[in-house]
Image (tube, rainbow, N blue to C red; front, side, top):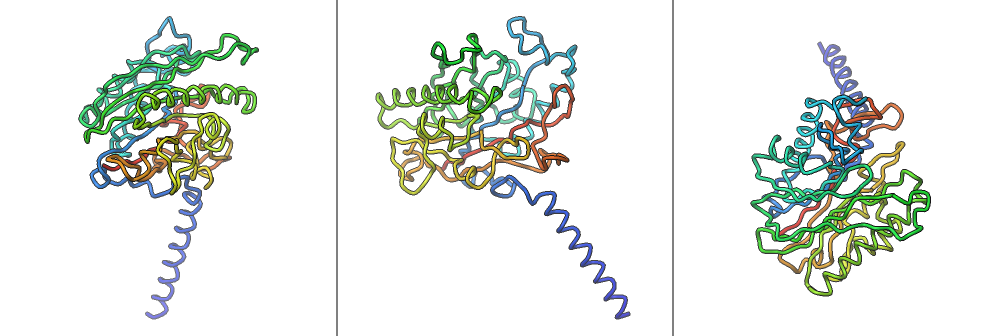
Amino acid sequence: MHYFHTFFNAITMTRFFLFCLLSFFLFGCSNSKKAATIRELDNIGNCRLAFYNVENLFDIVDDPTNTGDNEYLPTSKKAWTPERYQVKLDHLAKVVEGMGYPTLIGMAEVENANVLKDFCEKTSLKQHNYGFVHFESPDFRGIDVALVYKKSQFNMLDAKPIKVEFPVGMIPDKPDYTTRDLLLVKGEFGNGATVQVMVAHLPSRSDGEKETEPRRMHVASLIKKQVESIAKKDGSASFILMGDMNDEPSNNSMSQSLGALPIGNLTAANKLYNCFSKFQQDGLGSYRYRGDWNMLDQIILSGNLVQGKNNLNYVDANIFQAPWMMYNDEKYGISPSRTYGGDRYFGGYSDHLPIYVDLKW
């Protein structure tokens, strides 16, 4: 009998060891700073700000004014059917649910107001009474930015698009190049705190990182000028900047053109602070390119939100990553599960991970 117990315990320990080893290989390279479990908003003051590049959220209707939507139609090679469109909406809503239904959600790569209306009314978001702000932009791919917000927790006071125009000669090989407008929203939280929220999606690196860097630096400088213009009129203005910057916090567009500093103990009210600089330093990111994580999605706050002296203050930041959002790429490892790879339908969520910041009353 003693021999049987010894043999059984040996088998049990072996199985436990193999389980731990398998868990390490599957999740040991996790990109999340913390566990994927999200704290309830009531424990932190009911204010979570999120940003999510949702990867080509197009409807199934052909827009003759938008050639960018031609590949996202039921008759296209991608076969973008009503069923696949609804799956996409439901998947994105599941991510929002996983983040605890944030107060604000900045979004990139949305086609139009129709997809935002469907997102807010034809998914689980409907139960939480979300509204949205969106303006059509001249982007050559037909994608825009938007802000989705809980009507019960955020009162939208004003909103406008900010046109992005490039100096003559900056892009000589593409004189007709266009990109996304910036979105500026002024609003008030439930505790009376008024903020200026800007959502951005800077030009991509698709023509080469160095070759396209001047484009991103130019757009970042436009954001900086807008912030300075508002601050000149209202010295106590609070700013929340969020977006897919297509650069990392240490790149010139963010660190120099925008002048966003890493969050630290010493903060000045009139400076901008990048909540995701530390993530880049730790080798984490929201987008995986050929096996490397890039911290392209960021939320940046004005100093008066991180000093701890106001009625609305920074608490923490994180990348949201749950196992069901990921897949194990044979070549590059654990990566975000995307909707398409070329014309091949994967039925995932997005090629980016969402990020969020918690503020406390």
